[in-house]
Length: 430
Image (tube, rainbow, N blue to C red; front, side):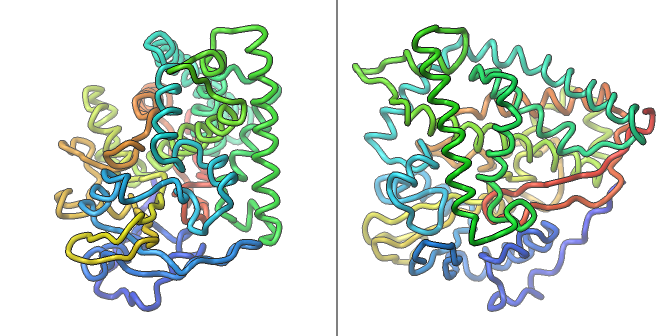
């Protein structure tokens, strides 16, 4: 069983020494990070930070770290004042075409955002969603069985990330899009590069980070271009066919928009669910009373899933940019100011969550912002993600009751994705 790190005293944090652009900071135990955010939320809720240095990109003036739940909600619900189109997934100002390609819907404002979201939403018909939800159980059961065989064929150990958390959402998304089996390892490899955040283990040469990032996107875009052309000529019963054929007000998605949306699915639907599952396993290991409660009571699943998402907050931040001079919580900010919405900090705000650092699977209500806050950019796939997480943990409880975490996690050194690279575990009955 893992032992959680004690939550440090926020008063002991030296805010002048904090650098939210330091990857080492994001690789530290989350309790240490939350102590920093507790202090920022209380004393400097709009703290200003310099932008990180990114090869080949000119750094901007800096950004404000938004750490209070109310401020995250206020910014998210006013898209006319706080733009996503200026860049939502990059702190630095990226070229417009790159910004849209890698951000898709996340990095768009209305009316373009509304048009594409309507087309995508129409493609997610009730029948398509019903098929997706129905297929999740079969995928999870197969992944769990394979993990059991891996342990039995070896020394009884598995890697929770590699053997459980990563395959489930990847297979669901690839099944949904109709990705050929031979291409799925490439999809996983390139999605990992895009969301590596420059982690030195995954991108060894920082100077080549942007090159690797671009190459990964081009490979994924090429795959979707080929698949979209095939589905246009030979329709199939998958989401790619729905995306190429769906029309709203006489408009359809372009091939580039479909490729960009696929990359978004890999970010929002693959990596986020993967990290919620892997870090959820770690959290249950560190809180065995809660783990046993859920195992004994399947009726706890609805609130348990929400608490896992709140606790893990898989996407750390999204960016917004002020379109004009604005006021937030009594403070004035000039047009062009950048704001990073730190979801994990908002999800531990004591003004909203009683005893926020307690992992409580029966917490209700639980207005977390793990799928984005209210507003036009709330996650389209939240229902599917909830289904995947709930089915996965019920299967772990029923089919892998002997699952035991046996070592510390290897954390991703990324400010954008709150993820694990590895989590060693043992199946004692293997």
